[in-house]
Length: 162
Image (cartoon, rainbow, N blue to C red; front, side):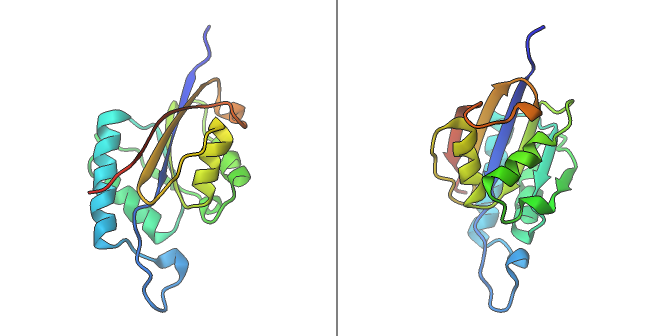
């Protein structure tokens, strides 16, 4: 039996504001961020299709990004908000990926830089910039627990603007 193919879609949150007196975890999206998040949702709908799981930082800007992305998707899964993702280095993000359930074939991780950019590089061995609303699609045969340095192929990379 051939190993199951895993697809990890990594999305950096859309452009966020820096309002005075607002804690970093509560920063909202800007108007451009709203447009860009919708564009990211459209791209995911057209190029990735169905998602089995969504793991998201609990920060307001990542939550808003997911809400806008999910509006464009057919039958989006309920997200899991994981505190480990906020401000995480790539090794912690790798642990989050390894914790995905075996029945998940395609997962979306929504997080922050520099962690998401470093995670793409760690998994694929290729550097690609992850500006706001950037998407990287990675794939590898096997299980989520097999996620390791340079195990994945970088299948797609794009920065969406709405």
